[in-house]
Length: 124
Image (cartoon, rainbow, N blue to C red; front, side, top):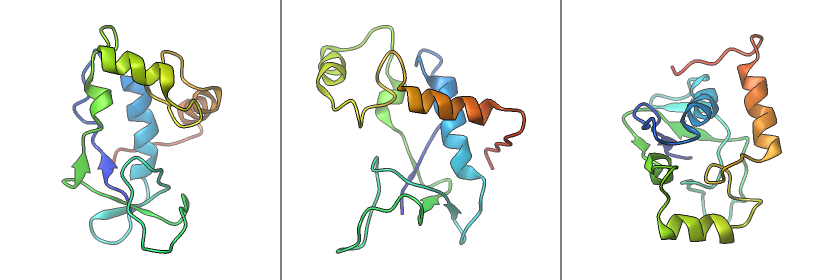
């Protein structure tokens, strides 16, 4: 289970705002049990049963009002703090996505698929 990321109030000054909204919207398509969506999860804010292995594909994401603000998405991309600059320079490139100036190629490709007129996305 994962708490969904709030995207309804992302500031304009966040460089990847539109991409984040598009990305997160794919997880609001398939209603599950009351208060949840059936969607893949990552490790941003996920909870697992003891002894269970991390599985992206068998998961639930909470529906509003049970969302969380992913704080890096609210920071001014044009004016990073010293801590933000340090994080971007030292974070594992296989894990970091949204904090880099240029998004990873695989993420850019997935976003392009989501933009396709043949792919329907709804914020629920």
